Amino acid sequence: MEIYIYGSILAGYLVLWFVSRGSEGKGIGRIAEYLYERGRVWGQKTGRGGLLRESGARRDLSLLYPYGRLQGEEKKFCTGRIRLALLIFLAGDVLAVAGYAAAEGNMLLRDGGLVREEIGGEDRSTELEAYVVQEAESGDVMKVHQGDYRLEVRSRKFSENEARSMAEEVFALLPERILGENESLGRVTKPLDLPGTVEGYPFLISWESSSYALVDADGSVGNSGMGEGESREVTLTAILSYDNGVQGGLRWAREYPVTVFGPELSPEDALSLRIKEAIESADMRSVSETELPLPYEMDEKSLYWEEKPSGTGMAMLVFSGIVAFLAAAVMGSRLHERVVQRERQMMLNYPQIISKFVLYLGAGLSVRSTFIRLGEEYTRRREEGLSEQGAYEEILLVCRELASGVPEAEAYADFGQRCRSRQYTRLSAILAQNLKKGNQELLSVMQQEAKASFEERQNTARKLGEEAETKLLLPMIMMLAITMLIIIIPAYYSFAA
Image 1 (cartoon, rainbow, N blue to C red):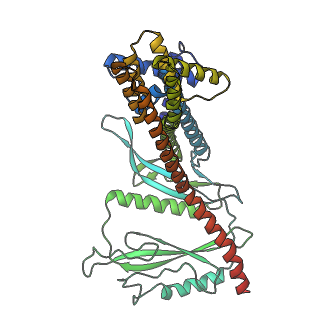
Image 2 (cartoon, rainbow, N blue to C red):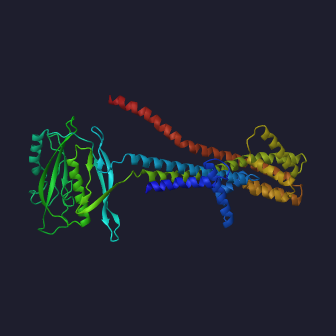
Image 3 (cartoon, rainbow, N blue to C red):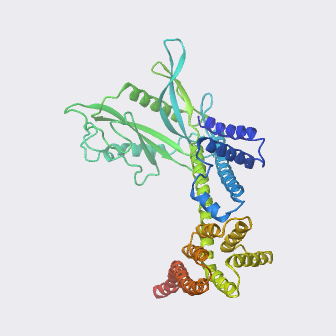
């Protein structure tokens, strides 16, 4: 079932690559551009806008690219995010397919049973699903799930008779050793003490029960549901294993009858128990053979076996989806961080801009001419290698609006709204009032604003310094802890010596 899911995902990528052949770009980039365009068209039809709609990423892009470049940058950002998510999800799907193929190659089930490793190989485990083959009333053959079985398939071993006399001694000791608080094995009412070893003997002891519901391999007794005087015979099998270092191991088994109380098993549980017993019995008989034969007939019912592949593929697919989502979220976070840095830079540039306004207004220039002069200076400095400054980019936009015929009052108001800062909003309000009242008090008001802006910059610098100290606190504590360890550990060992 899993392989169909992985294949469907790969087929989906191929379909998208085929239908996006008219888009620009290559490979995954072409698919990303196609999905972006489809999303934009769908948004226009439904009235929901593009993929970003009114999200924070769109607001951040509108602040970073306020004129002429918003649509192109929005497309670039969205296609980049989609491309990254598609790549991560595709990589996860490819890894899931590879994991499935690797698990398929390590499967043990063959026509006749489970294939063992050759002599000297490793023991392997597998999960099997048993199906009962039945014929429906319509005459069709159907498979009914019987149960899941996890098996340990041991590597091939040479069989040899060795240390048999010591095993007989252990078998003679066990009836007394396993009683626990019971008087005898003929009347068991309390848990048995089933040892894994016996002191003085080089054997590992494992236990099997003819009914694990009554006596489990750990010695627990399931007699809570039985009535008084009700009893049942259970056979405990002690299996002694001894690794002789050459042959790979020897085993001896001895059965012990035990009388306990136990519940009745349902037909399904009884069938599952007999299937397990048949597999265990076949395992013991075929330890020196190349395969562990599986039962295909039980209680006049046909059995069908399927092996479960490794389940890591779906986990890898889900993990890649989560990583793709987180990668897209990180891109949005980094975009917003650029906006935050831009606003901080605009706050630091504000006192300088106000000072230039005071200088040019004092020299007799108008507000309009001052904006043009500031824009020309910034353009020249950009050509000389100055990095982009958000506040001066907004001033350039004001110059372009004035050149295109936008009224000064509207251009100054838009300037304050775009900057999204209390200082620039106050500046735009001062300039708008100047258009109504004239230039008589503008210079003095701007001088007061310049003085206030420098005080605000000092406060901002102090706040940034405090934030930097806070960020350095954790590294300083870690360095202090490392220094203390460097001093204390040698001193401790010197005293211990």
